[in-house]
Image (tube, rainbow, N blue to C red):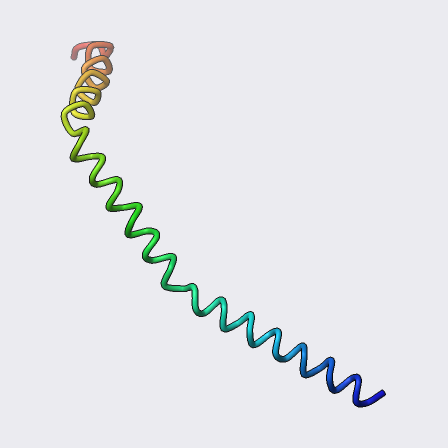
Length: 70
């Protein structure tokens, strides 16, 4: 019975250490994913710069025209 308990304990230790190693291994992947997303957003902003500027000008123009003059 002690031998079975010892084997189960060893298996638990191996599973926990494998899980911890796996979590530590993927830490850099999050940084890479965020960097790629930021690069894509910057690229889209550069491609659609004129459209975005025009849209924002229209939005702020509508806001300003709706305000009462002082």
